Length: 299
Image 1 (tube, helix red, strand yellow):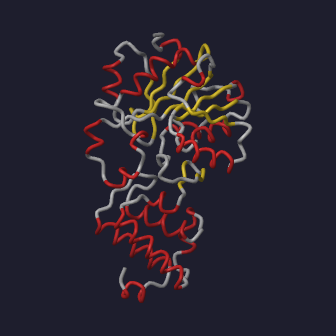
Image 2 (tube, rainbow, N blue to C red):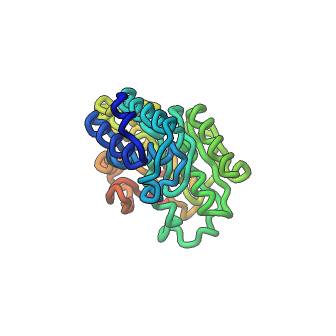
């Protein structure tokens, strides 16, 4: 942070331009809800000022107080020096219009399944009112469970994670949305805590990063819990367990929605006879797959 910067920044536009330049010069990595330096800087500046994300144009020429400028400069420099994602710096992230509290006890929400939930999982779920039980496996912050509770108003929602720290974050988010009576949070190694309970829909964004990729992650991603990312040698260590166990947890006609990143090849090699439907999201056509209960292995 320089005296020169303080002396020359006056408006939101000035500060935003300064942040974009500094982020680009520093060679930061993005991907935690923002795609580039402009998106990251816009999120940091607007939300640090408690301004709405969708109204940047309205506030660009608004003058800032000296206190606001100092606070923003401190955040900009901290983002650069620490390589901590902005979501952790602000304890806030957004996914498909939903705001969530977040800290480094759990992964920053960015699941492509959220895009499918926004459309009520159609056309695969033809009648949302017919969905009575939903499981969000590897729930992390609870984001998908919260979205599912809104999409399927008649459904009971279970949300599972191994990490007690992640569940503490999820508890805060569930309470913020007033869903304590709708969303049940459970500590469990995959399906152990719900053995014998069956669901119409299972949503899962599990760890799927390969060991090789874990070693090459940019510093920003190293602030996230390793448990939420690491998927073993080929990324499918946890995924294989889920696929083998999911049939017993689904109702007849039940559906498993599974996010696997760039692991399509590894998944298809693991289950060459498994019939999968690959779903289109903003990340491409091979990030999320759908399996019907009747097609899943039974052992």
